[in-house]
Length: 362
Image (cartoon, rainbow, N blue to C red):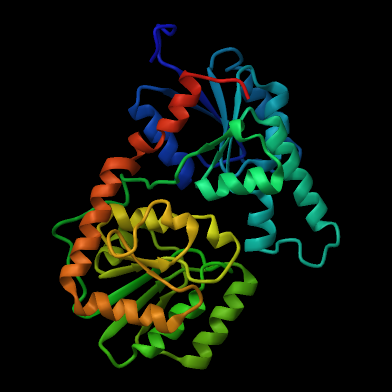
């Protein structure tokens, strides 16, 4: 890949991770498509055993790779990776540990030590990694401003999509009724309750909603409470995780794909996986007007944006697409073209390639 290398660069994916989890899979595929040799050194054991297993597995790769990527999620593994790595350590953070554990999940609710613990994990991971991969420019600003990370260590790599699974299908059959899809984990920032309220507004307009998702207790309790309160007759809810051979046809049968809608701090910095899935599948995308998503999407051109936490605006934008098939087609086509130009796995990993092949000191 450079004159200094007479063989392909080798990147070691490392951690207590699933290499087939979306972000890890997309980056691995993209790197391989660019001629990089990607090997996995992973373990899914619990407790201290995972460190011993990773240490033993890593011995087979010592000195044989050009960079180590601690895959997602990897916050607690970075210090261990730093101890045994024989090449620069790239930490695929996506976002901060604080955001995943406190803002999105409140996983340590009731524990007075939860925030100091999470902050320490963030501090160690960001100080010990040579480079840190984050999901958006807004996330980069957060790491600099709130976590005090050296800007030179941060690399923005958008999440992308596994295009072996999520892709267009010209012969896909659309539902007879105009159908709106909300798919994904039901979290605080997802705003699934606003989707239900928009569905209720559109209950008698011929618009159907397909909701496929499940999530953590607090967000799910709110979602179920609103569902029981409103009882929208135009909503089909699937609470289980569908296999891809069932999921993809259901997604392709829909006319619109929905993003996230809560007025939430985390949402200002993220672009969810389903945004890229929608692009790749030519589904018109509707989501909240936020800085993170605005790095990629343009309102009225590659998506429609709505006011956060505003079911009336969401319902109005859905009706606009229902009544304007030309606009819906334009948005879908523009987003698909943008995906092909910038966000396929092969293209999305370019910032990683630039950093590994042309390293600069931090």
